[in-house]
Length: 294
Image (cartoon, rainbow, N blue to C red; front, side, top):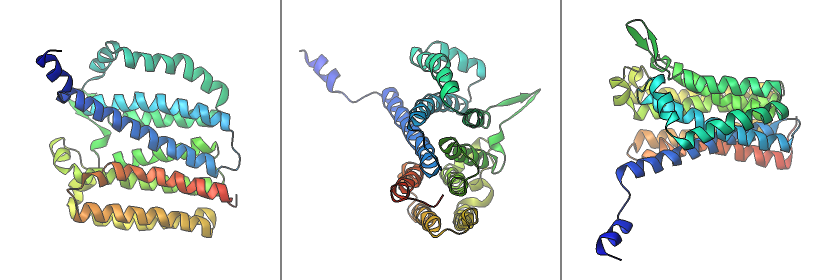
């Protein structure tokens, strides 16, 4: 083997390859955390269908892959036409789209309830529309530029995953976990905004960090986090649910303190922030194994 070949084999990945690896890792984490909320809803539901959970897993992976890619393109300022052209030239994305349209969707219509399909459709549309660039004559805007619209949209979309997993929207525990997930994801999206203040100013996005400033935004998120304890009303202040919420609220307090006093530790803005969904699911699993009053 020549020195040139050996050097090439052992050389570090190029910037383009490394960025692609980071994107795929981020997409896998988004899938993991979105599935965690589906699983949390499934576990606190009055009834479970494990075959249906497998279909939900497949649907979620396909949906997250498509929506995440779509969001990435729009976030980079690409048009719908450019999106479609790039999709046409990528065999992997075409394969994901093809199996979603011709395999996943037909199976889902057979195994999933109409309620789940409706919520999945809403989540997918919210994931695309909130960052979509809308052109009105000479003017263009994105819904994400308006104060709190992006955060409310993300919170509602991710919270709805709990309802999808539960296939129920009337049980007390299901409503409680839905509210908890929606509010915590809303706060989590605002945490990411605190880090991206300069970027939001450049893109004319009125995020909570831009409007309230870094310190003001963090204090507001502390207050909002504590207010989530009011969700206990959904379960008539059930002690188990109150402990469940308290653990999540304490975890969020740790995250907010970390970004407030150690902002250079970026993992608290991203990986540990998203990990909140996994903790919601893990606690639901513990409660499921020991039984909950539904």
